[in-house]
Figure 1 (cartoon, protein in one colour):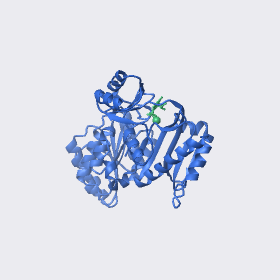
Figure 2: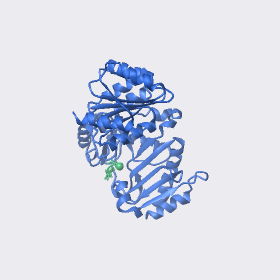
Figure 3: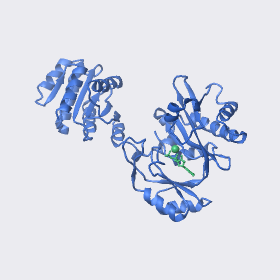
Figure 4: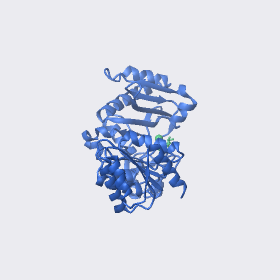
Length: 388
Ligand code: GDP
Ligand code: MN
């Protein structure tokens, strides 16, 4: 699950990490009221969406007067914003964060994540902040410092100091960095997070470190024990189809191709997408209907796939292990009749009761294109799309 910047900063503050004074606002007047409570004469107005890259997209503005605060908030609220991180999707700007403006001397990068290679919680830091970390990693890999935390002994202050000095910080800044890192490490563990990113962690002109941006991603497998985090969920920032799929316990991810896929089992779903690519096509989604696929789930899955008008054909690839192919065939027939599918449906069935399943499909009177195996099915799906 992803969080808004204002929520991330609230969590940082809860863990003793200093963040710039700020308040979230949902109307231009609320933004002005928020600014009035924040001392100083420079404010930053920041669009709250689940994506970075807002600076370049006009979602971060510096205001010098209350009129500018109102004007910038008005310009952002109620609009939709796309950044280079949203893959063409425009996210709704329902709120803005108004915070105290600061003078930046230099921007650093700091993140915490789980490194699977070393099986450790790892800090990644760079003195080249404000830039995409991927770009730094590519162009100047030596600028990136990593710290793998030994899980038994936990993060040690001396390790934070080593990292700070390696980044070229002064002794005072190293002390501030240590406090930030110890707080982040505790937050990361206690809240079962998957990623925390401060970009930028800024050095201000007065020499102090300041957390100017915060991104958090939490581990959904642990959401059952973090009601405080799930209460922060903003489903308006999430993909609509994926939200609906999660309500039906379907594992669904939207992709940008035009062949809808309905598959049972995550591994087979991945293989199906690979083979579609191999045949020169592009999948419109990842969809695992699960081992216990029944008529209702199959119908719901069809509706989900069809809710995108980008989908020009559907490839159903089912291996009947626990489920029986004849029951799946009944589900497909019922779904196609129920939903009124207008596009080609290619079906590959294999496994328990496969002959009975194939007979049902053949005798259903529906224009279902049967496939012999995964490659044949992918080929037919790609051909069906190409012919339109
Ligand atoms: P992002 O583009 O979505 O990652 O949003 P950020 O919060 O990182 O803001 C983008 C850029 O705006 C930062 O890299 C800073 O250069 C600038 N910025 C953000 N907050 C402040 C601030 O308080 N003062 C100044 N002068 N610039 C800021
Ligand atoms: Mn940022």
